[in-house]
Image (cartoon, rainbow, N blue to C red; front, side, top):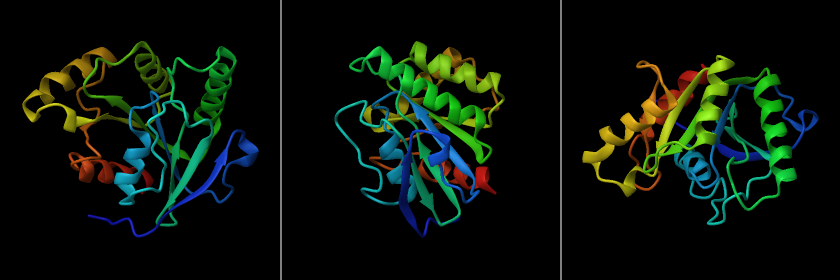
Amino acid sequence: MKKITTAEYSLSAVKPSQYPQDGLPEIALVGRSNVGKSAFINAVAGRKSLARTSGQPGKTRTLNFYCLNGAFYLVDLPGYGFARVSQAAKKQWAAMIETYLQNRLELCFVIQLVDIRHEPTADDVQMYEWLRAYDAPRAVVATKADKISRGRYLQHTKVIRNKLKMEKEEPLIVFSAINGTGLEEAREIVFKAVE
């Protein structure tokens, strides 16, 4: 298994002119506010506080680029579906996310994070349908697996697959940043995506 030897926060951007110019491959992370994107980044990178986790949803308001092994980026996109933000801000974020996902040539893979405990929301479904429409290479990661018993994984992943209308062969990783469930699988998908 390949290892993450270096991991650093590179920059935050709100428009294409601010994105990294080095041509390295990028993997975007999309998901609702509070789904655990920062915790996912920290776990995959093997760092405790590379990405700042916050108890307050809606903290990420920019595209945050994290460079791993000096070879590729994990890009944390603003969370969607957060209620306590003005409509104008939501529109702005949506435009920022869409511009990046549609036009970024370095983008090679998208990881959509959903909370394993809950049925995917309308926003989750919309995002997944959008990714499918654009035929984006993707995987779904069901976070917070430590919050339910292992015996219930199958039942919960079935709900997620059905709600998102996922194809059988599409990867769905059960994941917990707390106890490391699915961490090796997540790293494997990341390395495969950037090869």
